[in-house]
Image 1: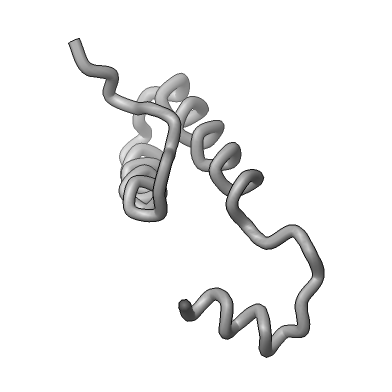
Image 2 (image 1 turned 120 degrees about the vertical axis):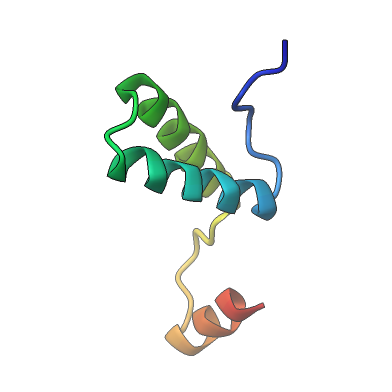
Length: 65
């Protein structure tokens, strides 16, 4: 049996899970599932998002890439 959720490995999967989380929250989904998806998203954010301070213009350029 395949797992419904796994560790997020790329941006495509990240956005898929973000959309799934939004749907779960707005449709009063299972709280355990919401917590799991939230934890997976937060872990990916911590490992892949910018951690140094950038000039706001540089940050926008980075986010647009």
